[in-house]
Image (cartoon, rainbow, N blue to C red; front, side):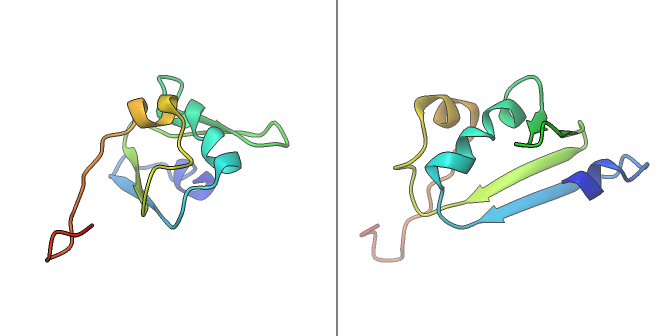
Length: 85
């Protein structure tokens, strides 16, 4: 994200995160997903998510997500072919 925000052009940039949500790191995404669009690291470094940058989370479930995270994210549910998941 740091490298992408430093690129001077405004071509679309996509950050894709694939894996299970962790209760600790997903909370740091709150400020990225709200109007601030700013990731603040533990070192207090602030990395902006610029208007031409988008994030996609590919996850199995939302069991560790807080209501705030769920309300900030668009959700797309894709079931299995047999409809059991």
